[in-house]
Amino acid sequence: MSTSTSVTSSAEGTAPQPPRALLRRARGLAMLGPAFAAAIAYVDPGNFATNFAAGSDLGYRLLWVVVAANLLGMLVQVLAAKLGLATGRNLAELCRDRYPRPVVWTMWVQAELVAMATDLAEVIGGAISLALLFDLPLAAGGVLITVFSFVILAFETRGKRKFEALIAACLACILAGFAWNLVRSGVRPTDFMGGLIPRLPDAQGLFIAGGIVGATVMPHVVHLHSDLTGRHTRETSPDGALGRRRRLLWQVRLDVFVALAFAGLANMAMLIVAAKMFHAGPLEIDTLESIHAAFGTLLGGGAALAFALALLASGLASTSVGTYAGQVVMAGFLGRSLPLALRRVVTVTPALAVLAVGVDPTQALIWSQLVLSFGIPFVLIPLIGFTRDARLMGPLVNTRVTTALATVLAAVVVLLNVVLVTAALAP
Image (cartoon, rainbow, N blue to C red; front, side, top):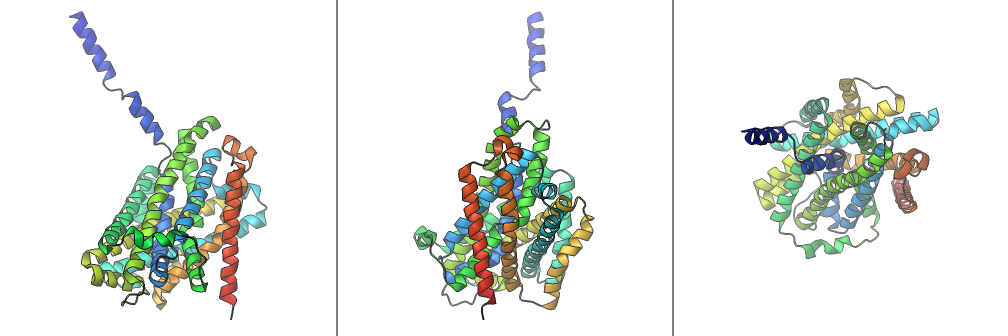
């Protein structure tokens, strides 16, 4: 009897406790999630416009640019996440603390302009998707996308994990839509392998390549990613122990690799499908609406629906992430923030104005991505400077190789911007 009671008591005492292996796995997921919120900006509607323009106009020739831009994005996001991991703070906050006030104000103003260009791409893309799905006027669709973004942002008030999970689900929808169309297009690996070989583009290709870089390496999510990782760090390692944070670094790298690999595959699929179906083809492809129509003509209604749904998921998720990033930027640089509704109205007004006056939305998307490319140096230069500072980063400081590589890539982006400006000002 006593033996039975002892066994029963032992079983009752140990049953509710989860196995140690499960606890280790749960701790292993502590830093996963922020990169997926950042990755959605890498497949926003601006990417749709630039990738389809690249594929339909130049075939597979700029596929290597998509891959290179995605690898650059991985490096940038690892540095951003590592900054948040080491300091528990975001990039904008560190800039406010360490730079002169005029520099901080200048950085904030350009960040707000980048936020407006971001909203321009995301709201226009979402409005186009609603027009394709429900035949709504573009202006009405833009208003609905703005309203729906508040619904998604409501998940952030219920916890960062719920918000990040919802954004990851949207990313999965985008990738699934283009995976479906990739299979339906009948493309073979031998068709596009040559596009992975780097080659210098002509003037038209350079313009589109600049848009691809601007659409892929999104400046505002550098601030957002460092903020989300910093928040996770404070929750996971509240005592600020750098040793603990160093052990979390591999999770941060895994998070970035997986999230941006999904985004990179989606971008590659866009360009490959565009090159396979539309390059030198009989159909004229110059707008997102014409792309949707061409999918329906060549592959059927299912392919057109997959494209429209992927565009809708991109518009909804990316505009929500953009608004959240805008809050982080303003609070970080200025130490204050606007009410979310007012901030949303300010940044979305240019996009709604473009829709109202009838500007070609696809061209507006491509130009918005060029604006974003000019914001990249304003985040890369301080990011590299902070992450190479051993006093700030401790054991998470960059290696010399990492700093050198990041510096070279930042210089290439700045040089690309100078070439684009020169080409735009040329008679």
